Image (cartoon, rainbow, N blue to C red; front, top):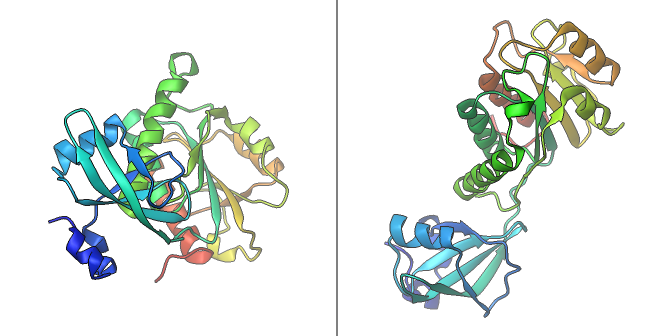
Length: 262
């Protein structure tokens, strides 16, 4: 059951927060103000959750605050909520990871985006490379970005992140490498490297990483990437699929420099 008003009167909302559904809203929310839900949120509230009048919703809106709203009007066409409380909740990682991911087929890139968001990545830039199995001329950028943003919001909704990570328009890999800031920690994961993450002693908050495609990066690309200041790192003795490599790399960085607890 969803939280009812009786819990709020007793100031017991903290004891029931795990049961409150979460939605994302773009609006700048204020306490005691009322808002209409979007069509997507209405569908989720009515068709998926089957919520009713007076039920409580937790809302995140790309800030470090969460908001609690009560359904005060519900019909087929309209759902209206009233914000009655907010709460500071910052669960962002102490490191900012910018993932440069070589584009792969739909299911794989969607999976990588979803899981990297759950693990704390802040920015994702899809990349084209020599051995990328997606052709630029057939790539619908606006459609893909729209789809990926929905995946990102859904992942934040699930994992309790309140700041929405950014996904940038796809770039050529070498052009993206040139954009890196001088003080970034820059890493390219490559199975022929001799260095490991544990051997990285220098720490900076901003980390830029490259995950290659199934066929790997070309020798020319690796040479140029290293010339642009990237350190070549290996994850282990086994060759990993691109989606596995992304998860393993982010996990290792969060354990070494971030907030993963082991």
